[in-house]
Image 1: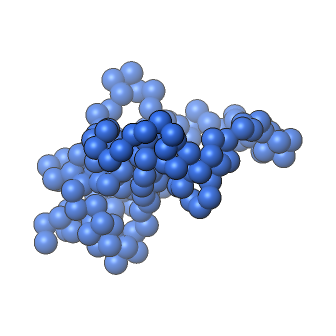
Image 2: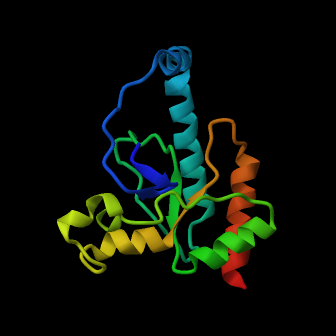
Length: 154
């Protein structure tokens, strides 16, 4: 959909429709969605609890509890070093949005330059997605949190 390589958008997408196979798969998954979302919310709360006092930033929880935590993202000025330290412990992380939207080639005609949206640029440079999936055990959250604490302590 307009990508030259992953996370590099060179044109705007034109087709957002599901094909029949995608629709069939989603129809099977849909009855499980509320349970999966509840589990992700529980795990997000556990991450917050276990990461309290750690020098990272976490977006505040939605007071109404509607966030589904497709991703659980932290922000760290030492993101790349933290990611390497977690990788050394065999903890996978992700950098899901490494380039802010205003700097994508597909939108260059809008004329925005580096510095136009400093918050978006900071988030692109410092955001790190932690493991998050409904089947994740609480012990795994604790393991990730301990890895983060150890990495940032040393």
